[in-house]
Amino acid sequence: MAGLYLEDFEVGRIFEHPIRRTVTEMDNTLFSCLTHNPQPLHIDHDFSAKSEWGKPLFNSLFTLGLMVGISVNDTTLGTTIGNLGMTEVKFPKPVFHGDTLNVTTEVVSKRETRSRPDAGIVELLHKAFNQKGEMVAICRRQAMMMRRPKA
Image (tube, rainbow, N blue to C red; front, side):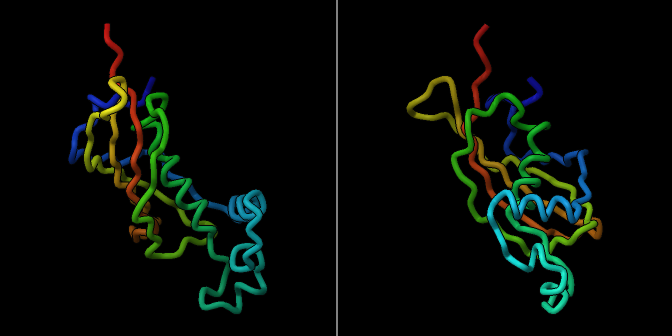
């Protein structure tokens, strides 16, 4: 698997993920519809044109999901057992249709579990930036990770 095992994570390591993504109106509309979120700031151009933003604002939960998703290939692909939580989630700047997002991930901590000798917990700090270099999202994610299989 491409993902890292618990033993492979180094506290302090920062990943600058090579995958970038330009977000589109279709992404925003589909995600809002799929999650039953009728917020007019996301899906109504006339309404959002009259807001302080002047145009549709991207659904923040899509931004969160994309940020974590971009990190998976370099960190947890096939080696995560499950997410335990996401804390300190913030969206300091808005995301708009046509923005291109890039992501970094820092390994904040790692530890063994008391109950599972085959697993451990890694805390990751994800940050997403737009094409101007402005941070648009940040969160700490706690993930239960597989330990390297014994030979």
